[in-house]
Image (cartoon, rainbow, N blue to C red):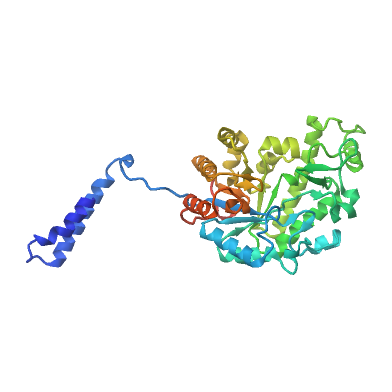
Length: 417
């Protein structure tokens, strides 16, 4: 083709100068058409292949206030959203419920906790959720607030201190659950007052902000070693002719009973969200099913089958590529993919753990090879700020992963399995 074009450029030098310019151009166009027709008749694998980009693909990132200061200054937050847009990300999951506080001004929190907003100085006098929604939508980003802590709270939080009767415990009466170096406690997801508080927080966000959806994760369940508080034991006995729950917290029947109770609450939350804003997407970002169910009583496979989650972002934070791939192949994952958009959460790094761009690129490709709806990265700060590799190198690499913009695969906007 290059030789042909060069020939066309030189052609006039010996072309009969008496021919009109119009005739010459017509001849060139006709010849090009013939050449193109011939080329297109070749087998596809003989033609030049260009990199393909899906028509729609989730390209998300979680924004949190843990090990990250992206939320604590207005201009920094705005600049971060601008950069994500420039790199063709299309979805953000900002944390709105962490450390026992809301990260937006909340009347519900003020009434129950005694504070309407997380006390961190950088959040005072601001409504970061409104900022994120306004700037994010200006940039064309889908904004799905993330209810990160779920039923979990710091042991020394105002919430835990002011509502001790709301907490659940192990069979030996202890309540503290270690998460890294932090002492956590868990609100009892079976108590009506706790359920109402959590649901009220969620509905408050859905009602007051122009969000595209809301997201939960495993913390919307309960560590399976808990649930032995007096209220829950009495409820179990009432439904089992006075029989107490098994002392073995892994007992299948005891696990199933608690998981089913959490599923019933999830149904009510879904209904409340849809009654408030029909087009608010209900998203879930859990661990793989076996871990979620066995360790957090979160039966997301059932939730997906019941239709009470509309978007799934499966956390597959694995370094071993074979293990990473195996998590994508489980039957419940494939079943969900045929029903709703299923994306894969990829670890971009942690505060003290750098993940190479090579690993990230490989995992993204494995996800694309299996036709998932997209990828989301945990978490913003480790995309390029917390890494052994230079920020500009990593940003350039993400530019190659997402070379052109694409639409978010929203179930409510015509996504098809």
